[in-house]
Each structure stands twice: as structure tokens, then as C-alpha cells.
Image (cartoon, rainbow, N blue to C red; front, side, top):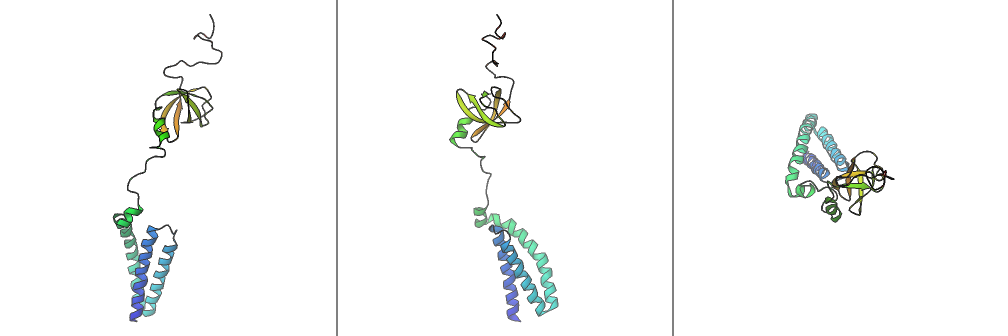
Length: 183
């Protein structure tokens, strides 16, 4: 009888350790199932000793295990192991800090001309440089003017505008003056 009680205690403590290990490792529920099996075994042993002891163990486990799991999740991030497992602050957005991302920052707010059709990705030309771009929404035809909204890693996000800020928009066959070639 004494060894059975010790075995029940070992099974319950082992199940608690397995629950903590499940929280810390990506076992996809395997350790949680092992913990559940240990608890079922402990309850079966408790019922073999005495029905009252078995019912008491079930009540203690139904109340105690959720409380234990709650506190394990609350306390674990504050331990050295938990600090090692969890992210402390948000990671930088993709492309931030890369040479390409820093180079593209200089184009934010500037106008450019679509060199290819942006559906939604394509290329634009800014100061004789080809830059990979993605339209904010919709299709942008080749030759249309866009404004660079922001640098997103290795490409820029653009929005279609009526024309460039500094240059007049030219259409094919318009001639050299603004009257459409008529003199």
C-alpha cells in the first residue's frame, strides 16, 4: 500500500513534468498524451486502494492541473529557460537593415514611371535606376506615373498618380510642345 501511494505521487509529479516539457518543446501533444496516460494510471491505482481515495485524486487533479498549467505558463517566461525560449521584443520587418532596403529608402515619396506592367509587381525607373515595385492596388500600365509609398525589404510599394511631381506627363505622338505637335 505504501509503495502504491509513492507510485501515485511519482506518476502525478511525472505528469506535471511532462506538461512543462510539452509547453517548452514542439512535440505536438505527444508529451501531453504521455502526461494524461500517467494521470489515468495514477487514478486507476488510487481506485485500487480505495474508492474514496480515487475520487479525491480525481477532484484534486481536475482542480490542480489547470491551476498548475496556468501558473506554469505565467512563471515559465520569467525563468532563465523561459527567457531563452521566448522572444523578448518584436523582430524587425523583413529587409530592414539590409543594404537593398536602405538603398530603397531614398526613393520614398518620389515619383517614378512604370517600366513594365505592374500586376501587381513589376519594375519602375527612378533616376535611370530600375527598381522592383509592387502596386498598392490594381493594375498599373507601362509608362504610367507612380509615387513610392515605402520601401518593403527588396522592393518598393507604389501608388498610381496622374503625373510626376516635377515633369509633365508625355503621351506617344505628342510632339515637343504641350499643344500636341500643332504649330
